[in-house]
Image (cartoon, rainbow over all chains, first blue to last red; front, top):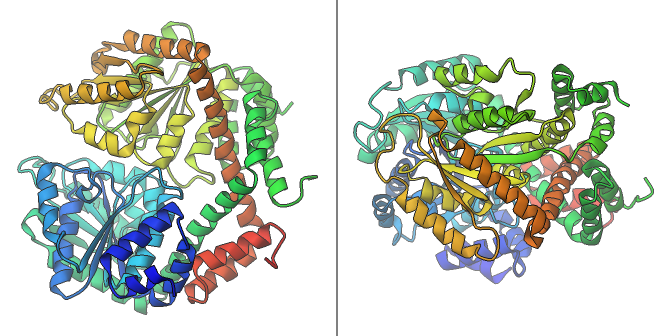
Length: 319
Length: 319
């Protein structure tokens, strides 16, 4: 077994961090380590926490960490959200609050840069989930901003996705447009920290909206609505309970089982797509340079150039 | 020549809309139409307008449309931003304001859904740029939310990217994390519409930040800072002037020329990546199903399954 993989299985936090970096940077025998750990994965429960900036996702995540720690579980946090204090994008107060988990060796915090990775963020997140699963996390909390294709793809890698909204912030319209509602397994209406900041509305419109969604999903899972005030720790138990119910439902219902298959499909798709592009870019570096020049000089359309490259990649350049 | 392509060249708005939908849906001989139009493209100037929700991007875009119309140019707007009134995510006031361009046949407005497209949003945007260029747009304004990989990729397809920020909204920290600053060719500090909403700060911190960026770019392009109050039409002329200067600089400086080559590279990359994945998914549908099952049953890791699929795609399944 890969030496780092062995240490990960022993719950070594430093080795786990090291392996995660190696995977992101494609350094050393990272793929062997991943393969070695595979038989030890599949135990962690992955909870997606998504929603617009300002909805209070990080505070909620923080409270959930405490909740699952009290229940004796190892907990990992993966922050894909650039506005999350876990990822560094926070005001000082948030940062200090997060410190309370910093010395707890039963908590692993990992932030994923939303750009500049070699692979996409979906794959980086999926790899992190696998490693932290092997490290021994019982629960993995994945925090994302609820916009963009990448973020929705990440949400789809979770067993249960919690969509967090603050009432009266106009989140509703944006949520519909961004398709957040479709990925919701649990709604959490969270009162944000700052007093009076979102006094109007009280979330009535959003609840109506949620009920519309419930109707559409009638024969499947009834998306529960949990109210919380994360800054005061209120509603956290109910939220964890709603997640637990969704977990049980998935294990028992045919629709829930189908969703687990969808999850496997998502896992494969993310890796397949990334490796395919990496292989093509690597093997065709010269041809891609020439094709770029053709496009720049307007001798070929991007479509013509791309089709030629694909034919070469498939070993059939005469096509 | 493809009949729709012919009508596009005549400036027909309906035919142009029809062809754009055909391309998104991969209906009919869309690829032939794109190829036919290629010789007539390369004339439009593409301006990216990016920034966080609430910075006033849509109002600014609206004012720029009027500005370029007054200068006698045909103008196209491509809204990739789910919060943009052009894309439907707006409060009533915004919608009504936008109407003033609705009857102008010299303005074409196109919104790109941020998900649910067959291809990625980058490719859909790039295709729209090509078609609207052939339609006769002198200026194409592409509005995006400044977060996520897709959005940054879209920004890179522009000739000039304007990053819009509202002072005192804490946009600075988020901008750094999301990498918006790196794509900025012009900063626009825009006072948002709602009175008093962003009274504190006055953008001083942001301007400091901007100057940091300027220093880093010393030998290249000095990113100018333009102040505007878009809701009152103030600063629009200066903004257009800053864009014009950036255009001239690109035509004269070696760095600017290199950037145009980067743009061609981006155009090719987006199409190549999309077509490659489409071809693989299409040709390997059966094999992908089987591989998904293997991953679900934990008989293979996603990496093992993906590598096997790639080998088959390359006509070398024994590898």
